[in-house]
Image (cartoon, rainbow, N blue to C red; front, side):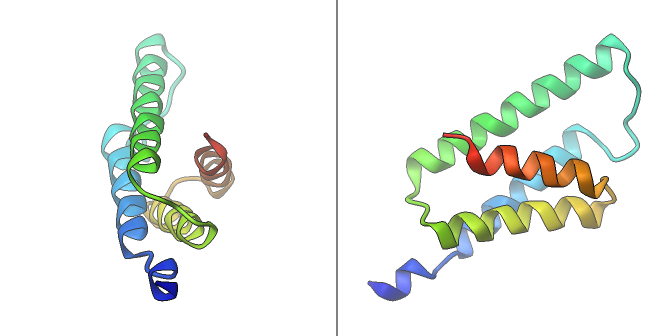
Length: 98
């Protein structure tokens, strides 16, 4: 059972899928502070956090698996071209949520 502690494949895949969801909902070039854009961003973030909450309820995430999930999410967004400071903040918020 010790080896299952280090099996983070599912967590990594979920982290990548969360990043892809974010990329699909809020493309890199999507900027602007108009009301419609802000509403769309808020709805996407709400869905993103809900997906994470659901995954955490269904899967036991130890510190290693949580770190792997966060890293997969973070690097997928950075590779897609999002601002690294924004990605860091978003990843931190995602990882500390209960």
